[in-house]
Image (cartoon, rainbow, N blue to C red):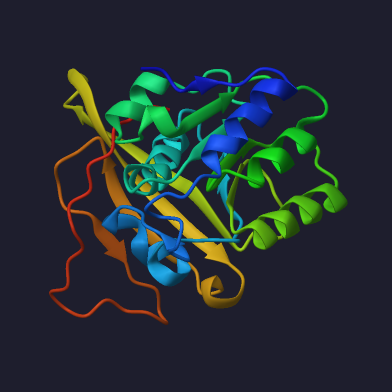
Length: 242
């Protein structure tokens, strides 16, 4: 089953009403994420009312779509509603394989020039709202939507440049594996995800993961937060989707 396609104000209002109904995750101030990402986020999850930006990055096909899937999957599985705005190439099939419940996923591929109104309406009734950030976003619009998310207890996830986010996640490096001496197939990619932000997220953090992969996830210690000898982080399984 594909995610619910939302076109027009009537469809948007119809979607927000059922999405606002009580769900198993509604009473929790922190929505769950995959265990491999908990160390990057204050409260070890998606704190309701926060803005967690995912930087598009400078690497082509850097893996940010897979990172988005990973952020949504556990909250969706636990009963939360998610919406994705302004991403016409968002793959519902790949999202389902990543663990996102499509019956609680709303897609607004073309929100039009009045996209802030669309996002604001979704914030009123949806637990996690992903928005592909247009080329230019005024500080007043960003501030107004972030304030609305805080008031409504929604997690706002801008995809692209967004000043003032509580946390910025970004794929900063990537190395493909599988090619030998000029022969073979590209099988997986090691990427480094960085996290930085404000308040509890002010201390920069990084983690290396395979996309996709079955090897050990390795946390990169910083001078201020050295990882104890012998400590290892769990295995991370993500599909490489973009």
